[in-house]
Length: 354
Image (tube, rainbow, N blue to C red; front, side, top):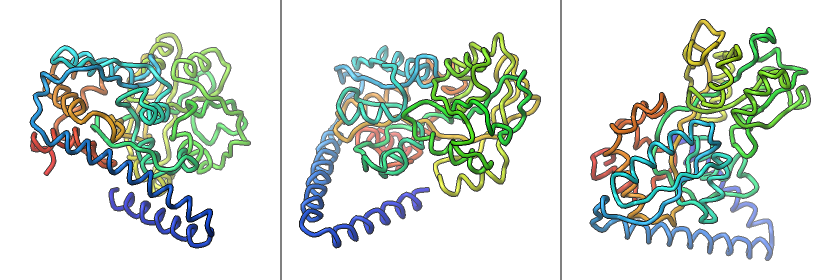
């Protein structure tokens, strides 16, 4: 995956060079401005690295640290709250957990300084760091990875009463394609197209977990695409009174999509994950790793303290739900984009990175 990301970065540099050579004086000015911004980012990262190089007692690092999650009915929020409570209780760092609209809003809020750290799936990190997908116009964002937490799954679900058994049956239907401001909307659109369905073939809706589940239960939509670590609380609440069916993804189609989006993996949602889930077998679907990230400007000592305390208190929150049970020393330092210096310092100290 790193090789693909490096190749993508090289291609972007070559494209920028070509445009600079064809653009005259205006292009030259833009290039100089871009170089200035890049230099500022590198300087900030260098300063953070210098701060992280000093000896730090994670249990005495103080101050407030705001963590952006997602909808209060989603897995991001439950996991973020569990970790934030554990870290705040263990030391002097006070973690403020904030509900947001998810990955892409968290990236924007990290850029503006409204939050110190955010949660996002690997699609958002990949897109923001490389300036691709939902960031093609905005360009490369100043984010660095803090931790790799757990696997989130694409849920394509329908009301069992609808009789829909396959994604190919969604043509002409009312479909929630996800939440606004998420990079996986691009993946969901590509997935529909792989089944021969364009956005013009459906009536698209954009809802969060709870809204989509309730709309399905009420018959206001026919299907919903939502991504989160199972069980998603918003779906779970409606599943207590409504029978939902998860639609499986075709294996060959998954292979085709993954070729274009290397941050995706194959995974399954077990039968019986949700009350009244109609599936008798595990459901084949996409997996996205959920990660923590921060701007390079985030305080290195605070990031270091957060990660260290998060791992040293793991036993206190690991059993919160299926998502937190996946957090482990073996996977926490899995790199999707470069690590923040504060996080990297801890991982090297703990022997999780060389």
